[in-house]
Image 1 (tube, rainbow, N blue to C red):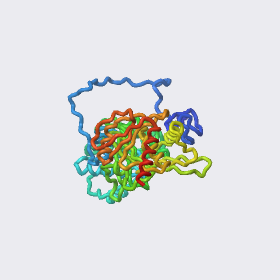
Image 2 (spheres, rainbow, N blue to C red):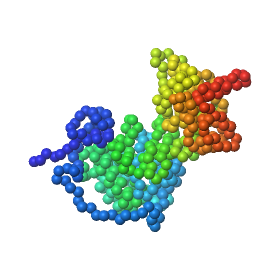
Image 3 (tube, rainbow, N blue to C red):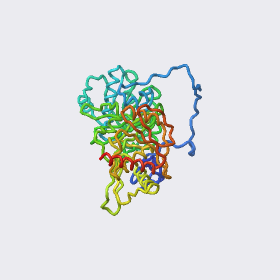
Image 4 (cartoon, rainbow, N blue to C red):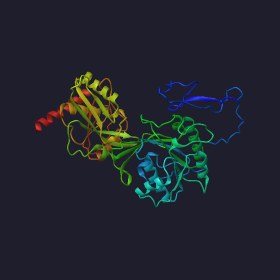
Amino acid sequence: MAKALSSFVCQSCGAVHAKWSGRCDNCGAWNSIIEEPAGIPASGAKGASLPKGRSGRLVGLTGGEPQPPRIVTGIGELDRVAGGGFVPGSAVLIGGDPGIGKSTLLLQALAELARKGHRVIYVSGEEAIAQVRLRAERLKLQDAPLLLATETNVSDILATLEEDGRPAVTVIDSVQTLWSPIIEAAPGSVSQLKAASEALIRYAKQKGTAVLLVGHVTKEGQIAGPKVIEHMVDTVLYFEGDRGHQYRVLRAVKNRFGPTDEIGVFEMSDRGLAEVTNPSRLFMGSGQHATPGAAIFAGMEGTRPLLIEVQALVSQSVLGTPRRTTVGWDSNRLAMILAVLDARAGVQTGMQDVYLNVAGGLKVREPAADLAAAAALLSSLTGTVIPAGTAIFGEIALSGGIRPVGQTESRLKEAQKLGLKEAVIAASSEVPAVKGLKIRTVESVADLVAWAASQARGLSRIA
């Protein structure tokens, strides 16, 4: 009897190896290589050939068939991140930490669609129908006419979706529990994930159903499984936040039908996830009691301007090696800013512990936060208070200069809308006229230090 062919596949990145080893040479993961049955031989393999195909119909970019309207859930923050609603026939992958609220948000969205007359199906591979109903009762959604199913076999799921008409939206919770009978591998393996995802995405494209796939994440915060799944789907959304914190951020990292890096903000309560329509007030804080070490950063998340409070604490270190700790920001950029302040402005922090925090649990990724972080560090180091109602943004170069950033007008208008009176930006920025907002420009970190020193002198005169 011929021995069945097999290959060794890394469960983290999907790389194929000739033999088993303890460490994957491609991604560096340990104990992630598992033996799986070999798939269909490639077309270049000996004795293998592709069947003759049939020619397809070629069409132009403009056509007479109107595009189907987007499926609007009615949850504004979710529709915003999706680009204005879900596109019929699209495949969406939603990842997040366990217990962050993925299933709750999708159940609320399906309930809203079902009440509008759409045929929607929720397929759970992790919970029984009774457990899903208990959550629906807690969220006061038990009257919504959405359809439930518990199944992990992909063939059975597709057969169920074919019954009684095409659904508008289908949720699969979660893709790691699915298995295909044509693949001899355990559920959650790379081959099963690829086969299950491919079958569901093919169904979505052929039938025009929006398929939402829930994915688990690894301890590094990435969606578990091979990266090829993220390339296969149309949209990838990440649900961020701390389970001990009531606020959640839904972020689009890939979207073929809308802007990327768009965010939606939600608040977790006993009635589920509620929209936060004005997140700037949430991340900016009340501002009633100004303290040293706090600065307001005017940032952009996708197309949405946000005012975010950046908090810094600089204290004398009792350790041989001072601490450099960041929450919600890149620690490498903190090290760079401290080095620039030291080399270009003579601000020494070599013997101090430095802590930097982004308020509200938000993660800031854009370099425009450099200037606000530097201002917060100077404020904490000198014990001065940045004037209330001041927005700060700009990128710091290694030369010590302040570089302009994009979408300056949107940032300034958001600051003016929320009652701020002053903004500190790069001198080379195109400064738009914003009524009621005083614009102060700085060319280098030395100018920023001088401005911080002037605030300290002003406070001393007042005292």
